[in-house]
Image (tube, one colour):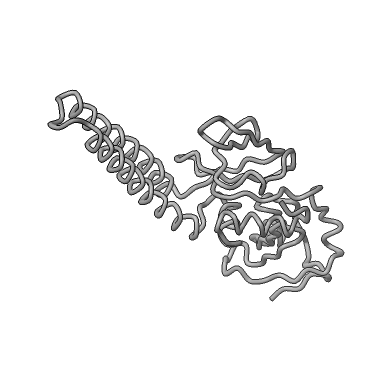
Amino acid sequence: MNADPQAHRQELLGVFKITAADIEANRQGQLGPGQKRRLRQRAANAVLIMLGMIAVFVAIIVAVAAKPLRPVQWVLIVAVIAAGLAAAFYQGRRLREALRAGTVERYAGPVRTSMRGRTGWWLTVSDESFHLPVRFWHVGTSLRYRVYVAPAAQLIVAMEPEPGPRLSLSALLATPITFTHTGDELRPFRAQVDGVTLDVQVNDFPAHPPYSVLADGSRMDDLDDWPPAWTRP
C-alpha cells in the first residue's frame, strides 16, 4: 500500500481495474461504465467456472467408479450438477440484479480486514462486512476509506481513501482553482481539490443565491459572487 493519499487512490483504481470516471459515478451513487462491463463479465465467468467445476467433478466420479455406474452414483452425479447449476444461477442473478439497479451505496470510515477460513479475506466498515475482492495488502488497516458497494450483489466495486479534515470554504475562496465544464446545466463547473470533487451549482437567481458550492455532492454553502481566485472555463 502506498502511503501517499493521491498515489494510494491511483493504486486502488488500478487494483479494482476502474477509472476516475467510475469513482466519480460512485460518488453520485451510480455504477461507472467500467464497473458495469466488469459485472457483466463476472456474471458470465461465474456460470462458466461453475460449469467447468461440475464437468471436472463428474469426470472424476466416472473415472474412478466401477462400471457400470450404480444408481447411487447416478444420484450423486445428478445432485452435483443440480447444486452447481443452482449456485451459478444464484451468483449470476445477484450480479445481474446489481447491473439492472445500477446503483452503489457508500460506506465511510476506518476499515478492518480479516481472514475467514476458506471464504478468504473480508473488509469491515461502518459495522458492515463484505468480501474483499482485492489483495489485503492494498488496504491500510484502520485507515479511513470510502467503500462503494453494489447492494444487490453485496459486492465492493471500488474504494478510495477518505479525505482528511473537511475542506474549509473560506480557505477555498482564497485558493486559485481552475474549473472545467461538465455539460450539466445545473452544476456546470467542476474541479478536483485534494481528492475532493468540487462542484459549483448555478441557482435560480434572484429567488436564490447565484451559486452553491458542493464537495463530493454535499452542499457547503452559497455564494453571492464568483470568487476572484477561481477560474471558469
